[in-house]
Image (cartoon, rainbow, N blue to C red; front, side):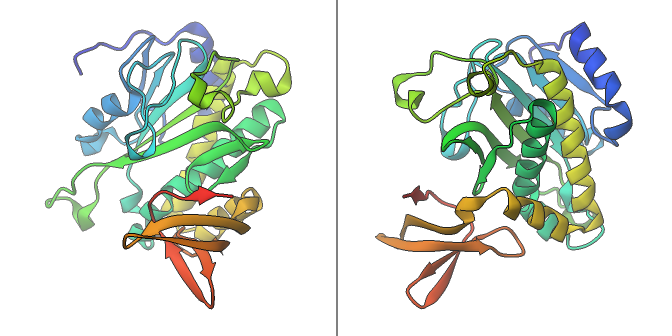
Length: 276
């Protein structure tokens, strides 16, 4: 890392102290930056060391935040919560590949639970990685892995899970203004960003424990309860140079989106969907 982390601000230190008993192995190392290119970039540097599992990178602003498929994540100072965590789902006791595949869904459940616990607002989840309120985007999640280390047991390697939550009202760029929202805009009152930050890591720790222990049904059940669009929504996507259209029919045991197209079911693992 070319930039040095700073001492955790008192409000963040206090907030994490209050949830310390719920963090498990997460937050052993808490790195704070007032402004950063990308929390995921710093966490990926840490993730090259398998001993850094549980490290958490926090920033008040990002100049090069990103979402899925290389999109820019709008990250103005003090407007949101920008966090990345180093995890190793591949060391799960049962079905490590499945645990890794379900990481993003587990994170979606954890963030929705944290937002609800902190604010009383219960966001919906949109497959695979967005939190929505009233159809507008509140938060996004990006999991990025390193190339597998051939010397690691069972191919275990670290994965970086990054997330951004819109907290305060922001002057969104025109292309985002109609599609984004924030906690304070929805609730009409200030939010304690430090308490929310600590709660997200604590909630993630609980769902990460589910992954490592093989409690996959608990994650999938929690996700289904918060993802109304996963059943009965019309979607389209490009496949083999043609556009396919179908109706969502849930998710499978590895988190792939099921879409009914005529008399067959497609399993969508990745790619760009258009929701109607």
